[in-house]
Amino acid sequence: MPAHPASTRSLGVTRRSPTRPCSGRGQRGQTLILIFLGTLLVGSTAAGGVFGGASVPVLRERVRETMSDQAQRARVDLTLDRIAAEGKRHDEERRLFEKDAFAQLARHDATLAELQPLVARGDALHRRSRDTFLELRFELRDQLGAEQWKKVFEGAAAAASAP
Image 1 (tube, rainbow, N blue to C red):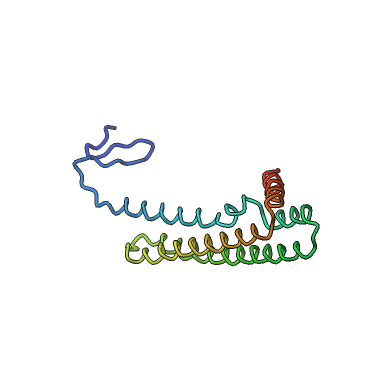
Image 2: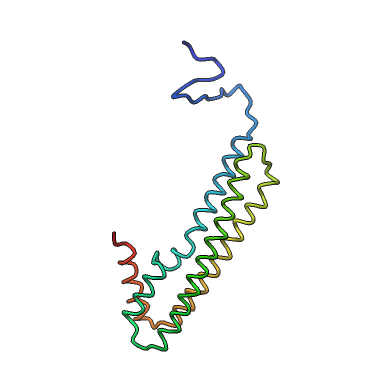
């Protein structure tokens, strides 16, 4: 059966001919979906990226192996507790954001004006978590000497990449 002149069918996909106008709404929707997914993916890796992909339990174990001074280790443990708490807080905020974002994206009639506050919310969430985790990373760096930092993160990277 010959293809209709205004479209071609290939693997069930219909392509519009250059003579048939396109509203651009589909492209705008695809762009917004990409923005949301980018925000979600980048935001979700804030803590892991700042700490070399190592989890707090792995970092805590490496600190115990590396540091002999109990008082210094106690201060580092408090910072690691704050990192863990911030990670949980961020994960909960991100989960709520994802729920709201996917609810809006499921609506095919959502307008750009309705989605823009979600984009701003996702950006703010990412910025806040990035700033918080960077601040905690610098605090941790100040508590560890250069050699201790190197030992903790070399061992943590190896532990994080182990199967």
